[in-house]
Length: 409
Image (cartoon, rainbow, N blue to C red; front, side):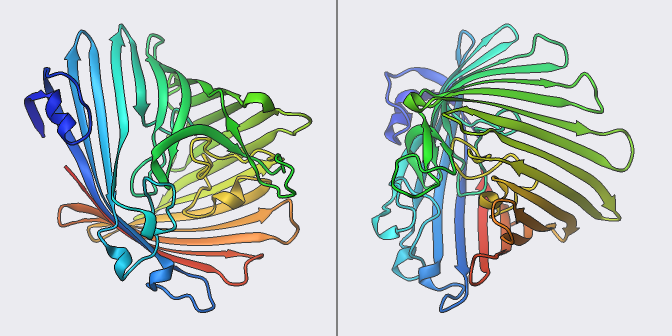
């Protein structure tokens, strides 16, 4: 949808911005979402019980405009509600603006500015300054995740240059991010460790990236059959120290029925005698009739700092990432995932099974089965998923049903 000669003052009425009246051409779009998840894990827990279920309804509006002299403006407002579902159906929400996503009683309706940035075109360089999404393809260790109601965003300054043929160079300074449980509050990036840093006798403390992260990514397509992306990060951890990280990804298409992907990297903390986190992964893609198949393997070694998104502390960049397995694959572990995708009716069925061996704890294995149906109906995109997660240290497997519908406009 395009609104011509829209006063920016009008946007302020809905809380997105408040400035003096200025006529611009602005494109308006967004998405409406209804999201529900329920779980059971043995004992007295059952699917669809109020105490085991979470839900959200959300509306997100995007406004983008060319404001002249090579400048562009981007705004995004995000509103979330429970629709009163906590009265009868759920006791939790997937996302909120109050940092208490486990308790709907204190999660009232809220509105937040989740994007607010300026762009500037300078020759073959585009600057993007402000609150924005960061794609995993160009920022593999600080990226916006799409598994929840809405994506997380970052406060960042990003420069994208295409002067070199077949090459995209991205430089960025990333200072803060919001969290999936709290889209309204932006705080320091953080890295999850396996250490007791605060001396309370409990391991698993996070260390804040208090001075932000500097990133340089080079994506080159000179070899059409093997495009490569290389990323480097320098993260300032305040008084604790620093950490550097490198990540590489190569996609190989040699013109044969099978395609390959290779990835790997390290997180190198300068914190006392802390070891490096090392990781590598490979995937093989092919087809068997109408079914697209993928076999992926990852190995993470050491891992005093978990191989996770420093913006959220949730997902990983690994090919073996599934719906729930991030806590098990991001540390010292070997993981294999087999995935199949087949068109069915108006959508596709995705089935994947993963097995993880924890190399820090003998005999502590993790297995997960995901069965997902993603389709279009009634002008919306819908998803229905069943997840079974079985961990040796858990008394019973965890089973989850997740459904959502998104209407893009």
